[in-house]
Amino acid sequence: MTTDGDFDWCEFLGRWQAEWVPDEHGTHRERLGGPPAPEAAVVAAERRLGTRLPPSYRKFLTAADGWWVDATASVYRLGGVGEIDWFGDPYGLTEIYEEFLDEAPSDENRLLAGMWRRALRLETESDMSHALLDPGDVGEDGEWALYVYQGWSGDLPDRYPSFRAYMEARYRAFHADRAGSVPGFENATTRAQDANVERAREEALRGHGDAAAGLLAEAWSFGRPGSAALLRQLTVRPAVNLRFAYAALVTDPRYTDELLPVLAAAHLEDNRYRQSPGPLTPGFELDDAMRAAADDLVARIRDGVHRYEPGGAFGRAVAEAREAARWGDVDGAWRTIRAALPSWSPPGPALVAPVGLTADSVLRQVVTPERWRELVSTPRAGRTGPAPEPAPDVDPPGLRWLVDDARNRIRTGYRCLWVEGTDPAGLPGLIGEPGGTGLSPQPVGPRERVFGHPGPGAGTGEPWEDRAVLSVGRTASGWTFGFEEAPAQAPGGQFFASPAAAASAQGRCVTLWVQPARMHTDRVVHLSVAERGREQFAFTVRGEETETTGEVPAPLDPARLFEDTTDERRLLAALETEFALSLPRFALTDGALHRFTTHSWTRAPREGEGYAVFTWSRLG
Image 1 (cartoon, rainbow, N blue to C red):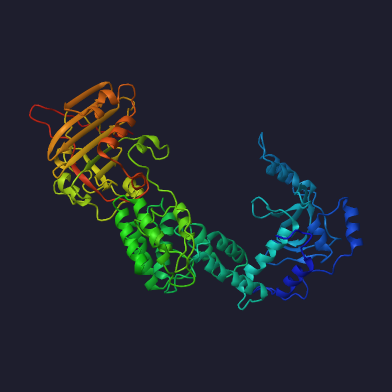
Image 2 (image 1 turned 180 degrees about the horizontal axis):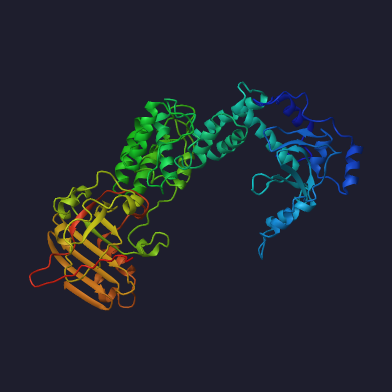
């Protein structure tokens, strides 16, 4: 970056003048700036004002005594040396801004509150706006900060570190406006920025994401076509707030299948708290066929059935990764995608990354922000180069994250089981509700698990029944698991019946139920282990009382595990050691898993036994 001493104001302003054309409503101007102000005129103005002007503004005046900024800006014209003067705070803004200073105001807020009375006003024509140089906000280079206050906006003023920074920003804004509104707007600057876009595209495919992003950010500030869409691919996951970035590309058949799902996913995310997301509004008119396709995609992504299906080797890897992710192996799914990234090729020059991946109903959760950064730093489309540092796995080993992980700790209780010799799809056949429909057709995400889908068969059956709605998957060591957070009842009561025996038809089953202490109830921990249809041992700890059946192995003896602690961490560590058990944290807290409703975990009352059902309702 050049210092202001190296900055050629005559070249910069001459280029601006040569490239200037009116907007679609404006008239041509022969000259944007006045003739250079003589040094004597600048000195006279400084004497009148009682201060030496900041370096970049002073040098600007010796190149042009005033400047027509643009009719599209809030400040239209900057005055010459004979027109600038102290602002004087005619609107009493100082008092207004001082009211917002707390007991320990930041330096920025204190400077802003004091700026209004000491600022130098530069504009002579504007839309109720002011360009103000602040002699109280001075950088190490001696430059005064420039504030643009738009009186009609109600917003804080925009701050620029110097007059030069403000003028460069206005030059870029002039280009961006004309690029979008004046057909055929072309000059040396636009051609140079378009070349940077092409260079950035190649850098991006080589995995040089940061270098590409820098080039694209500058090109985007000049309004160059394609720069915004490319930049968004490199800086954020595409299905996050990208409604308008891809609008001009969606109707291109090369990109429709990749981008329309991304817009649909972003639309659903933007409207996630509404009862209905409403129709997709991409910022341009959709014909009937594309409107129908967009509505169908919104419904498919909402229902969890949309699949990203690119072609070739990368497409095969995506399908393999989806199969792993839908059973909980999110880290394995990402490793599969990571290995296949070099084989991905874009359908056209407007894409430099497989953005459709972030709209897939299962895989979009796999692609975390850290992994997207890894993705755009990986050479693709046949380019070669060093691979980036892999993004860390999202799943810790074992079970202790259930109590150790501050952010993802399951505080509301849980019940789960692990089964040997049974595929996840076969678990409903062992412990599913009678006449149930089996696994949900599609994996269900965390929000849908809580709000959208109560689960197959939920709410049916006898009042005494307690049917779990389990999310199912496969652990790294090959166990099939089923997990439910926040079960309604507590285990170990008179009618409790562990599902371990029924689930162990093909091998062992370990069942764990943890219910934390609540206002009027003790903490309850239940463990039962069965093999080949027979319970081997079990224990239930309720408060200070322990009930045991069978011969409990010493490492799992509740007297040892809970002798001086109420935390189940020792039990979880023992289960990791004895059975190599684990649970995939990310799939359970952020991912999508199939689920099903089990048969009841409580038995029917026998003759002579009674039970009570309590309901609550609001009176009045």
